[in-house]
Picture 1: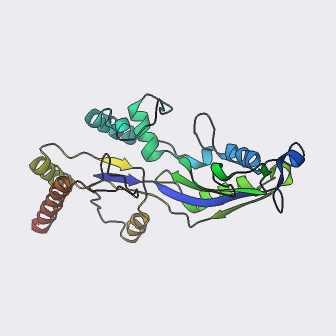
Picture 2: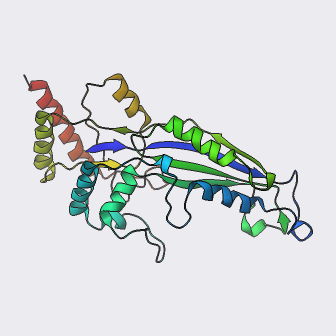
Picture 3: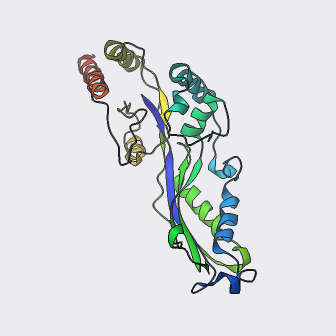
Length: 269
């Protein structure tokens, strides 16, 4: 069962140094590369070696989160890593599986998901390009205010542009994450019973690195409500990818669990 979802903020960071492209031999050494300046700006937010982001994009990690991560690792083992299609000898920044689960569910991260202003390498000429733009997506800890974080990220990027370049960070709508309140003993017992019935194993809980924006909205609108959030995504489900799929047998068992839990709630005094 999902106990937390990270928030997200996205935006396009653009660095412009010229009004049009010029020959790199004629301009190199005089006109700065927009790509180099872009790298400087990214380094303001992210440590290029560790991947860690600035402190205002982090939250304290409580003991319950770490205990939950340890339990997840005791069940999933190296699946925490093996579910990704690693290339060559690529590896994460730590060998601690528990720390990786915590980083994926309660840590912050930044990914460059799109690039503009540069041609395909096979079509590239010896031109010093006028600008470089990158689409960035940040994943934020579940309890972090995404709106406040977005404004601070924008300020870090746009303040004091390197070498006076024209810099802009155009924000998408930020989305704050969500984390579940404690569930009642009766609901926990129902969840555990249904898991044992249809999966032959106790119910497990963990956070999810992705974002479902309306969960924060529902949590604010119904503060006393208990939420049973689950799904069928697993290793190789490839959510949002061209080969996305759901495991049918697992889907049937999850559906049975949901039905049994709903039936239990309907018959409780």
